[in-house]
Amino acid sequence: MSEALAADLTSFDDAPRPGASPDGNAPARFGKVLGDAGIEVPSTLFNESLALAREGHLGQAQARLQMLLCLDPDDGDAQLLLAKVHGAQNRWGEALARLDAAVASGVVPPAGFREGLEGQIRAERGREEEHRARVAARELGELKALRHETRSLRGETIRLETEVGEHLERERAWKLVALAAGLFGTLVILFLLFTTPRPAAQVAMPEAREALYTAPAAAALQPALPEPVPPEPTLAALVPADLEALAEAIPVTKVVVANAAPPVAPKMHTVKKGETLGKLAAKYYGKSSAWQKIAAANPQVGPDGAKLSVGMTLTIPTK
Image (cartoon, rainbow, N blue to C red; front, side, top):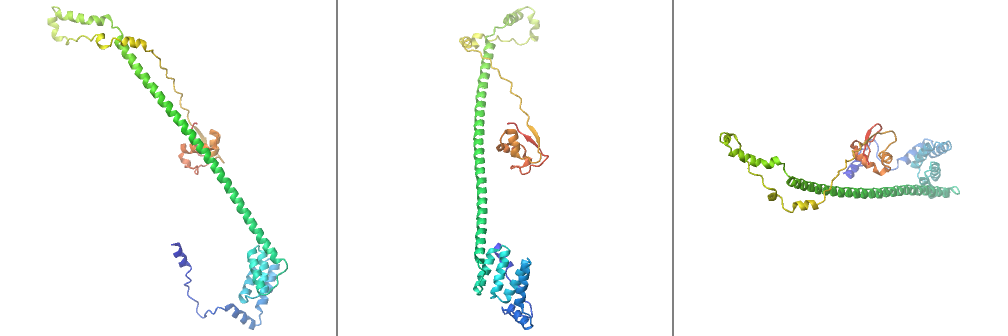
């Protein structure tokens, strides 16, 4: 699609102007007409270009020399003067090309002119190579820094994963301990429930109830009395004979659960000028690589901290 657009922009389908037909030699005809009128165009343009160049107007001198070369492309002196103008403009490659054109026209250049242009071209290429080398060295340094940061982050990730695994193991161990303590406590409660002797009043209750039913007045009160309660099962029927000995053999351990430390509230920080997530991480955690922890707790700054601004209040999570 871009190639088709470029073709449309450079189709050169403009309509020619009426009144003239192109013959490919318009500059020469201009020069002939002006020469027939007594105006020596090449010499006039050359002299004006030379005067403008001496005064430091290099752009105007270049324009007149290009006009002169349109009228007479084989003017070697104009080619040499234009080469000097390009040299004064630090356009060493164009100056060398104009010098070659002047030599091809039979003009002898000044001594050392070509060597000077070639030396400037070599120096410019050397500066370009040096600049490219500096850029490459800077990029290599940045790449090494990024690799070092990546290794640091990888090590930090491994450390955090290890800590999380240890915490999970400790949590599972505490859950097992709590479950065992709960089961043991249940067994102890059941054991005490079935082995504790009942009061004498509870033991005598069935005999008193039986005497009440056999008294002469029981007949009148019989409809209002509740249904007789069956006698409670004896201890021997409910508790195995060896449960008491087993309970005495099992040591009773008191489980003391320490009060958990209260959670530490996160800190709040107001962003000042010049502060970044890396600087805040170095301030609160001692390392700039922990900036992602602050970014995760403050989604308003964006995943990479690009939306961080002065005056913004941030939540600093605890370590």
